Length: 118
Image (cartoon, rainbow, N blue to C red; front, side, top):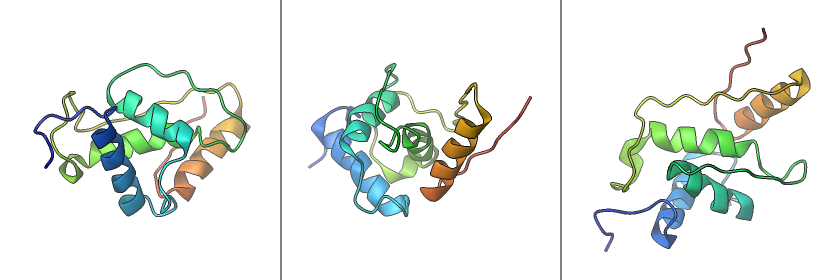
């Protein structure tokens, strides 16, 4: 039986996040990688995260999955942190190629991304 208040970073919270990702992010049928299981619950718990990992290690998904979960509040029980009902993620990078890569990764994981060049 689930409690009425769940922390995203609790074991129960991480299991719920992983089950949502497996069901609703078509390219993540196997669930989250270890780095993502550590960082995404912290991001959703409104904690700051500084993640370093090799190229291809799953960092770009750290931008999209929290947005996708926040946009679909009905998919999970009441968590003990406030949820933004209309979330937007802004990623600022110094290189256009990196922006293109991030959007491609988000699209690959069935998440939407938009590039604005100034």
